[in-house]
Image 1: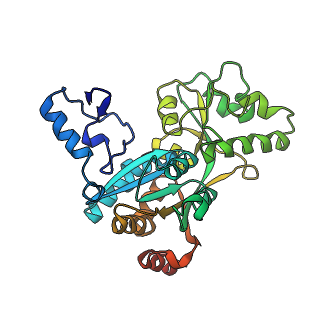
Image 2: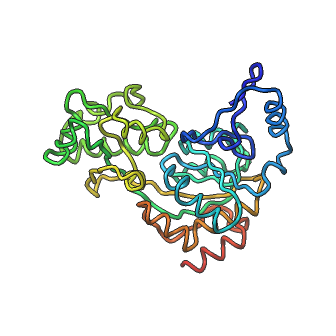
Image 3: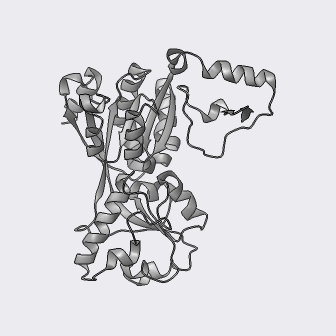
Length: 320
């Protein structure tokens, strides 16, 4: 990383070609500050958007899909297409807000909640999205650290009783920024009635924005695996991809993520975006998703269907 005055420049392997920072996965290289390197970095950053986008596809995706995108779909797409996947993970609502505020630019947007697309549709929302396709689901589960002192309790006691034990460290996402956080609140409210335990949600979660529990979605798995958390609320695709022990919850109260994909207005690489979504919906993409614990469903289009690229419509039609 190179610092020039107040300008901080990152290694190209950690920044997407449209100028946005990639998720920090520990592989980023750091360079010594030098005028030569600084000059090259500055020249690269101020290059035209068209030049930066050439050959790469920028995908803004729900943080629950980090393992799938960075270690499964992304590399498989690169190999199959010859293009280069560039991913940025975050809460679905947070990403939508950044898109609307022109703080983040991309080709493809993948959300964990169909309703989030609505916040990007229509003239008042900037017409960033005109259609989207639902392609997979994943139920909410509890994932726990197998070395935690509470791990054995999850095998011998009701899950909701373990979550009320003194000292247990619980992780979840912000219900205002991430659909999974909102589904967690809904789950606990339903569990309160289901198990007939008054005050259960408050005793387990505290306030909806409890700072002792609410964390960025893309950091939850790492915190759990490192022992900073005993248990967390995840989607099944996350626990499957990271091989985290999980507790499945009663079907009657378990909410699910519904994943959708769309192409953003003004995508720097529109054909690359079409190719990526087509790959995601095709046989190879489905295979990778299934291997990572997603429940692949028949793709369903919503929005202004006449604006859906023909290549994607054909895939959806043949899957009916």
